Amino acid sequence: MENAGCAPARPPSRYGCWNLFFALTSTVAFLLDLGTDLWMAARYMQAGHYLWGALVLGTLGLSSLAMQLLSWAWYQSDPPLPPERRRDGVSNAGLALLHVLQLGYLYRCLHALKEGWRECRSEAASETKHGYAAFLSHDISMLRLFETFLESAPQLTLVLYVILSTNKVEISQGLGICTSFLCIAWSLLDYHKSLRDFLRDKQKLSFISSTLFFLWSLLLVCPRILVLALFAAFFQFYIAVHFLCVWTAMLLWVWCQGTNFMESRAWEWLYRAGVAVILYFCWFNVAPGKTCCRSTIYHGFIFLDSAILALSWFCVGDSYQLPVLLTALPCYVLGLVVKCTYYKWFHPTMQAKFQAEDEVAYDEVDHRNEEDVVFRQGPVPPSLVNRRMYTLSKNFYVDSPDGPSQANGALMRLPP
Image 1: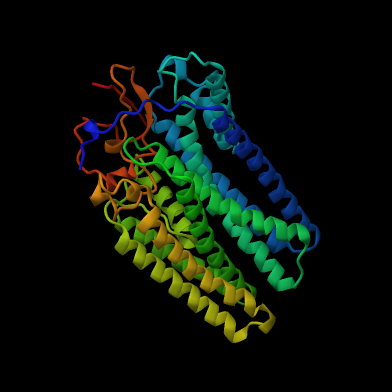
Image 2: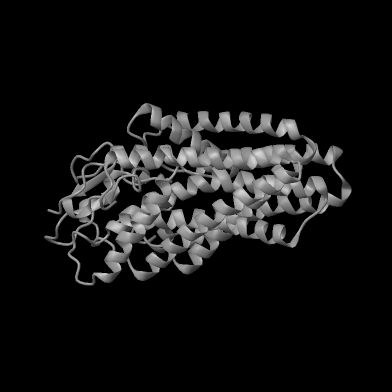
């Protein structure tokens, strides 16, 4: 396999207008989602469903707390930025206050928008300024993924539970459910694309590859959430027990794989706890090496778990809800078929099969490692590299001649 230092060169990526547009759209969507959650909780409370309202607020608060803690930990682990990249007018104490007030993530979004606007306007910007907004957007992408599965997925399960329990559905609810499913699948695709875009010597996702990735993500997440909602509709207490048991199993699974994503052990356990929640709903790769065996074990476990939940519901459920169940499990199987098709014929490494036969059996780890990312283009200034977006690329390359790297945070790499 080609060494990292010998791979084709790629300069720091320029933050374009499309990137700025999607960043703005994501920020607006985050604010709208926050307003919708508060409105939904208030509506449940007014209708006398205090538990439902409390669950909405609870998932919202838990998601926000986890995002603020991770965001703060990443700020603290980052090395000092060059003068031209330092945060404008915000001291460390100010950042701490923003995170205490649960505004740290929103500040990241606004800061990335500001830097992105500067890059888009400054066509003659120096190479040292290229890619800084992209650097900021990578952390936002990861935080957004955690927000999706700590807040959006549980709330979507709750909405489906409410519909199944009351046998009533409004048009707005139906549209909201469809939009939520699409947004969850999109967040997975966006994060996956962000990962690959940050790897210097990896093929980019084509339109067909992106479509298939989005499709199998949708087909695997939707049945899982539907089955959980069906089970919760008749076993309200046991769904909580089920979550704790499966979440604990997934936490142990992540721990056994020896993740070292965060700088301190305490922050690492927070990261592992968040990943365990993601694994409760869908596959998330966290360890280096070939993933076929781990993926097979995981999907087999989730399929068996979902089948047991479905069978439990079938014993006591209403027959008119049977089509939901008959749709869910076959969709999961179809999702596995599409996923296998993607990795067999449409994975970006398959497009480079004749250059790298040994990459076929590998899957991106869902965070990055130092060895795989170095921006080189002759004697250009060093580029800012987001360590958190390539820690798991150790899955691909264990050895690298590029020299020592930092334990966490951003890295300044000097081209030779």
